[in-house]
Image 1 (tube, rainbow, N blue to C red):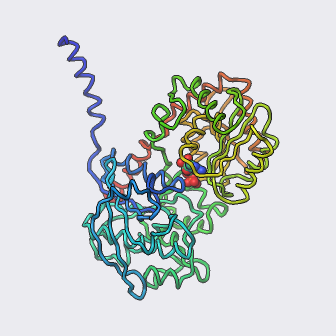
Image 2: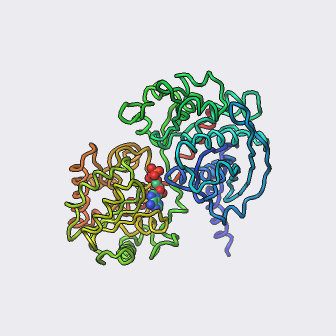
Image 3: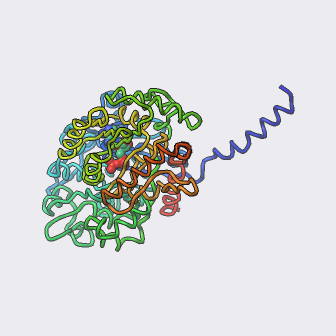
Length: 507
Ligand code: ADP
């Protein structure tokens, strides 16, 4: 190789090396939450607990993720866990003691510590009913902090997620005061305000063993007799975040506030919105082994057709690459705007349009989607199941993805859709509003189709606008597909914001 060429290569490498330099100083963070992909996942929280720690490592953050060791965690992970220690912990008001085991699993630079206790975590699913879940998460929150002390791993920040970890900031400033872990600052992230962990005061007081004074209106007390674990955590946390800017504003209003709007307005000085991203390695059309054919932005227009045909074949739909295929991947609950979807399906399905749903949840929605599949054989397919592989195939094979939610803290499906070149059709709420720029037909800009008020007519209108563009103005549609694939939906930007927040709390 000539010296000149070698010199050129060397100089070209310099900026790359500088870019990959990790930001200083290093900080340590313990994530505490109730689910995490791939061990156990019921929704977006599981995705975030997996992807954000990975992105934080690239920001020079030392992350430990603390999770319950549920029995339902697949054996292939359980068998790789390493025993890290055990101790006995007092929990209840009468000082009952419980076994706490710590099982460790290190993967991709992230340390996962699983809190082991047969009595609480031997049930099949992470969430059963509040009668079991309240004691379970009273135990989990306290055991997580006790485990940090036991391991002598004292983080700068304890980052708690949703109501299941809501008592952690409360425990830290009460029962753990004076212990090493109390030096940490706490952040409580709201992934979904609808679920709060509310039960009568005597039960929560008994299981948590927390002092009487936290059961006041400023902290846990709600109504006349109830204790709200999320509310207490929000009061005691040093900082509150939620998963989009718009949702941070919405939850301070009566409509979206789930009875905590006044509490959140009171604490608004420490409330921030930081939008979620997705793990772009896990969601990568170029390497995704579950797809019929892999693709990227340079060949998406051709290859998506092949994925569409494969999807149609697998699901028993009429095989035609020119049909407009609309997907919906969701928990089937009223949050997700399914009443609107049900209202529009009969007028939506025609010779150009197919509809594919994947989800489980409330019987009324499961039944109505089954009913529509029956009515529109070959055009509608209802997959009433939880199936990761099928989800990947729908993201790749559909042309558009519906997310018409009543409320949506962030929403991940619209981000995954864009990454897969599938155009989102969303209601302008929460993170949907922050991540999907509406299509502008005059400038040919935007990422998807949006509507504002929660009305079936407006959803129908948005779908028709999308379908018209697809059927009649394909070049503009195609440009949007490529634009969506090139949009940055990774964690890079938001992980930096979290890092700045950690630095702000522990300069
Ligand atoms: P939420 O957390 O409210 O359920 P999100 O949009 O934040 O909604 O996250 C949903 C996640 O769960 C996405 O990764 C989506 O692909 C996945 N998902 C939802 N339903 C199913 C299903 N039936 N099968 C497979 N994955 C699903």
